[in-house]
Image (cartoon, rainbow, N blue to C red):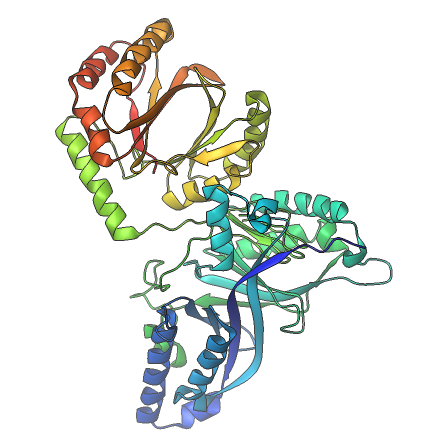
Length: 527
């Protein structure tokens, strides 16, 4: 018997398509049109903020659809099927509904499958990157990217080609190749894939988001040549459109361009609480073994556990790994830290680094094996302009390595963490175990001063070991450049960490370092 992947379900999803009766709209008195637009606007704004959900969980968005199939698409994500039903019926109670019909709809549920992680389904411990990825798949946020493409899809069950009779290993191999294609679109495509088996006429609903609509065409086109799609993918139809804020509803109904100039930005959309998805999403069409995140690849078939920053996972799920942060509080804390460092003449740059954002994961795998895997991922990362650097650093005094990935944006760094969490031997992500987090200190040393730098670290390491709140500090060396050093220092609290920077020993080290460093150091807060 063919192995059936386990699944775990998250939020329910409704694509509610609406057609406007334009003749009735034009013939209605202006006062009636304004009343209908106001009611529709209030409905959309309320549901975007998930005010209808008891715990405020979920989100919604409205899109204008181009072509004859529909005029509007309202997308709802809610924790229960009953709340979806309620959202649909509440629209029917608005004055705007009197001017619309419902030519189509699609019902599905987000999910992860056994392809993602055996430990997850067996109750084992999973790392933070994978946990965030799974959370993002089960409770996704609707991305800010304004252009949208929705299509249902199924896996072929023909006499010659039947996806469901293939062995697991063969499906996984095809999906692996499919995922590799999708990863090339990380940063360009976000997606939400939800299962509709038993809920609607097809097996999955795929929703792609992009700032550039051509990217949507490109990823769908390129994936048509993957065996998982060319032999086994079936796609009955596509919808294309653009997101606009509820405030622009009347402008849309009046034939104006939306979003209007006032709202034509990506920051004006409110997504309720929103759960990070690894904007690295990928597309997996099929039994979801797809992976994180995040913001991108395409996978038509079972998700095979690959993380894409913006891809296609067509199957029992796709993943996004855009891990979310609690905005204002975190930003305030980071600003405070940077201010204190500035007072001590230490430049810490943006909240997560010197004009960059970094993520670090630790691995106990063989360093050569780890480097080979990272080199493959880095080749994909380098397609994106936001990528600064990804490297493997080996600890000087113990058997573990650090994979460091530095990006221009926080979302890209978080998405990269989703991909990196699947590397061999990953044991933790920087910041997971310490109360405050990790300070990552990057130093490029003059070649003639390398040994002196290592000796100085041993001296400072002895001082650190005696400091309150210090957990551990490692000196790590870049596998490709022995003069590129990374010091990872973990602390119990912010005050303990700042105590190190205030110490005379650190100030003396800074003065000493002016003669041995080839470039300005970077001090990056990784948690």
